[in-house]
Image (cartoon, rainbow, N blue to C red; front, side):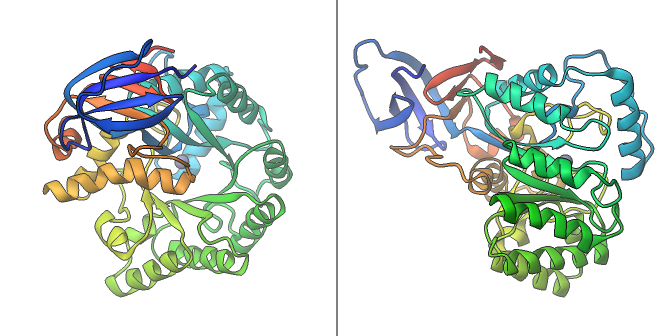
Length: 396
Ligand SMILES: [Zn+2]
């Protein structure tokens, strides 16, 4: 359902007050004093700000304990500790994956997120169970939220024989991208894992999004391997690297060389601005022309007690983590959680211009910088012309 909708007295990107007319899910007109056509729903925005819908470019919907009783964090400090702890909890808790995915997706919608890239856990213990849960929930939420699915080998690829076949099957059965994780640090076989990941991408013509936590030179070495393969296989524009902590650990000369490599191969970088490790810094990446996007990553699961699936809060965290204070820099974080994500996810008709898909968020506020700082309640969230959340509540 996507009837006509007229948003009166609204300020797209905090600009001048206009009315915005939507029909058949598309933005048709921006003008002053538009008369509502017959049967058209009317919303008075009261000079609120209109933003394009948020893009959560990296989340783990199928891991979350959202909506379940509070669970104290139990994992040790390393990535390996957290993987093992999660495997144990998965056996104990036996979550209904599709229910959990839907719960967290609804929370994301209530905060103005309409487009998601989800890394779904696949390993030899759970097989494609999480993948199937995500696909079922994605079907049920179709039309309200778009979910890209990355087949993600959380427990490693080469080090867990049988995983490569499962990843291949997931992509064959509809996963949109193939993922990877610390080819050196976790699998101890960077070329082995990358051969499998790029092999699957080549076989099915899908994009790639690799988790890379490995630090310093070890991480940089793998970035170079990924760039080489991206170039050799003509995959420029289809490869993303998530986290890339190593970019926050290189000296200026090394970082400059690395950024050139990323730009040349149009490799995008996802950062969620964690507080406990060096991270890629936004300003130099964006100034060099690297596409940067963001996401919630883990939310209230075995990995972290934190997270609200709120990309406006994420923009604030990015600004906080990068030490941003000026309006211009605060704006840049809004761009990361909207257009940056839309570029990487390849969303067509994204934006607030006439002819774009009517996916937008209405918030009270004065300026864009103020929104990042204050994170007001989302008054209206519209997906394809249909109201999907009101006053911070998902109404699907
Ligand atoms: Zn992740």
